[in-house]
Image (cartoon, rainbow, N blue to C red; front, side):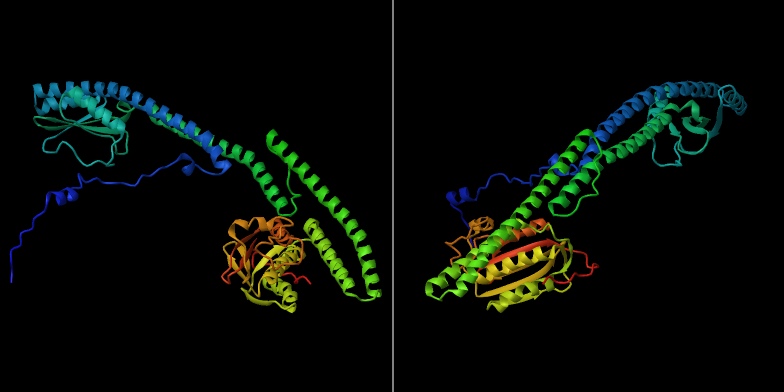
Length: 478
């Protein structure tokens, strides 16, 4: 059953429904020059040299050709138009075949034109090349101005002549004349010179800029290798005076750093020998003395002192004595996790096979040992996983301990920082484990990052550059 319903709206509701004129909103797109400009020094230098020259040549070519072709084409077309107009007037005075034959002889010599009459043909015909040049447009405008009638002009066909078709009372007068009479030859030659000069400039600029940028790239590569602890002895000082100065300063700095590291290693080796000798004597004396609770406490203090010395030496000793080799990640993790598992820690391993890294084996083993021991000291369960992520290998060590607040992640990497307020279960060491681990990782071109673990505690992710799979693995460190 249908019923008519009257729908009414109050003024207040109409005011609420009145949204005003509809406005179309478009997203704002901001394009900054630095977003589209090349990022490399080579391409930026090339752009700085080539772009102004190219713009100057384009503007010069456009201005010259426009002015030159317009003026030259008008002058030449007016001359042709005057000759054609004279021939048309002579024919229209006496439009007979005999007069037309006489006019054809006059057009051939001395005007150098081929004159024919197309009585039934159209004014325009199909061109050999569909697109017309700018000079053709200039020519048509000047011919129409000189003849005061429509004109068809075609210079697209190959050959020494161009065709001009002019309507007359008896049909279409077809005039063919030499191309040199209507087209200036200096324009194409000018374009050829401009293109050749631009190509030569680009070739010289590319060769020159490449020779100037290559020493900077070599210097950056040498710095990167030195920062990763690799040899950079193939670096050759060359280039401009400023680049040579930077390279010499880098070599001097690298030599000073290397000499400082060697001196520090020798000093610490002496300190280690000097400290371990009295520690060994104290151990022997404690073993020969009567065992008492006080003696046990002193023995524990002596063990803490020895561990502290070991951590000091590991933190400042580095891995300069080792050579890099291809190391199997799975074998290294299994070898490193063994002592922690034998010590009572519950360790789960989830390792992808075939993962390889180029590393100092003993240094990388110490890095992993610090991460695993740190996780085992603060949690009841430890999980170690290794995956390939793009061009890097990620080794994650997770625990189910109390964790660390996110704002204290960087503080955990500071030497001698133990974060007693958050990780109170750790009673061993002096707070150098994570500092040593990050130092080793960065010397290998990687890093150690902290985050929240899926187990509820802390997740330490060791990220290292991946090694190509074709390199045979080195034996796992013992």
